[in-house]
Length: 519
Image (cartoon, rainbow, N blue to C red):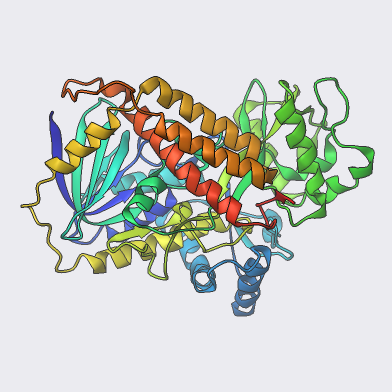
């Protein structure tokens, strides 16, 4: 079997804002960098084609920083790592303005007024992230001599060697295998929302990187806190729903009946002040009605936008509907509404240096947990990606000083064991497992959870894992069909990490933020 072997100083998994910021921090050093992405160049949630833009917020002054840090804790149920939160807020303005210095166009709020972010109680300084100019700027990174882009590549496994170096086995779109050895690894691969049937993840056909990290010993934190955001779709588009519109629409079921009972109508105005579902608010009943209707019905909840909604004097409504109209023209048809897995507040546990619990593995962006809590204030995910992307790069650079890769280590046994295991997996069972995990996780954990269902699901995943392999004796053949290798390892990662995720939900016995569990 032909496998291309490559050596790098530092490898970055992911080309969203976290990975790109890490790469930009390292670009002018005498460091050999590899950056792996399943996309072309700039990729991930930071550059998602179906979102109207990314808002970024920072504190107005030093006093506001203290308030912001406290508010993040309050909103997040005080389960965040306050040291990480302080680093986030103290570096937010610098990172946002650095984007402007690089040449990225930043949008201002209407009349440069302070904007109250989702879940916040007061206004903060708001800037809008412009996809187009950011792509143009960051694409220049890939022309640097010390940066090698591995695009359209899927990581199949990650290895830890005795010399503390790391190894990554990956496959590209042409089904060629590459094995990279590196002195340090930065995981900036985003969250794990692809586990859900309804999600905004662009990683529909890839394994969960957290599974590889956990297998190597990386600790996870707060996995149960996943943001589910209302998503609107019609014949023209699928996009994040603008929550400000709740109070201007009527939600209907397939019979044309109002989904929201009269007794709960008064909650719509409050529900229009934040996007992702949370159990903290008394208006959570709005989400319950929508979710229950969508789970039981083949036709989803729908609505129509009122005429001239874009003329409402609201920064977020104005920007959203201007983007929607510019992208898709006038929208005067039936629009469906579902909850989609949008963001993860949990992930790989890191310290103030963006180090994981495994030496030489760093993490940043949405791949990590602990910076926020059970709910996350709007506009901070993008900022966190940049702040900790830079921190991860700086400390990875320190980590590799005086480190050498032991070239005498034979990597073939590692590769051989990988293929002998994965090729025994039945591709038909693998496809069925992926579909089952996605549908069962959505129906049982997206909005409403209960302990019995979670425990039963975990048992089911364990059984599926045991039955994932061929029943007959398997003979290894180097001329295997490469087409299904990703599907097989994806199924294994879904079932294994799915159990870890479910256990986190089971352990959290009381509702908190985005985790709602029926008593």
